[in-house]
Length: 395
Image 1: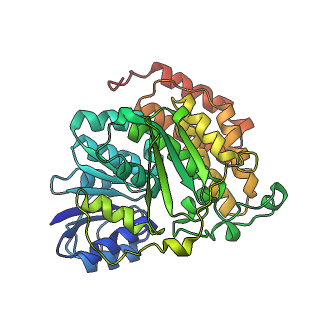
Image 2: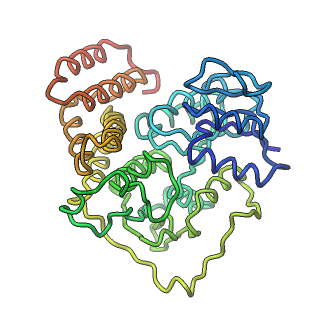
């Protein structure tokens, strides 16, 4: 019986994680559930799964969540009873809990892109130091992980991440300017939360996945590529130095990579299996990404290559920009424009500590929410504080 903690249990990935647990009640047991604000759903989940620990960011106590203890995400993630910690939050919410889990040597099933985007160097250093394990839940990284089974990392020639292209793959720049939030939330393939769905439409999520892949698999950015694959059947490809390639295929269903992260190293026959009708597919298409129409991919890859606090600023600014778009305050192209302006205004800390990253995150949110032109004094305060801070023991 594997004991599972689910952080972000009321979100899309969290709910699908509980679908997997529900399918294997004799093998998987939920011992912890945490969410940001959906207390009513958390109460329903706690009544069904009977966890030892619960937490909700918008509530002050356990209330009506049964006999479970009210335990914060960091304590829950590092608890010795946890065999697997599923980090299914979005945005900055998962960073400190992920660090707590890896410092305690836990196995982390990671779905939160922003954790490795903002602090990949520190998180991976802590993982190596403690002997913890990070297992990817994103379908693209799960595909690479599965394709690398039994392979030497030194034999990797290239990683190719596939992207569905989102709902606007064929739209012109003029048509993209008229896109509404309702349009962007209708993803053609995947069921995801609002933030990730918008990031998929802008291709920001694919840029963040490139940064994640760099940290997870130790491959330089120059050898990571993105191609559009509308069918979403091939989830990623690994090219090897001898000219061979491996690809992982499955029908698009996030519960499959979630299940593999929970069952690894075993594969369990479960209810989410759908055999691919290869003859019915008829073709598998691939296209180059048009970064003129979808500049977020280029912004993310450039931030990753620059390193330091740039990726944290990218992630934070994007989170604010997506929120502004969903609220109808900026247009669809305005997401990339706002993120670009915040990055341009940033003075990077090249070798950041966690405190530096948290400060850069806070600065980027302030700038994105209030306008780049008014942020110079805030940036000067942040950089001055960073220069005075004690350097990190991770570097």
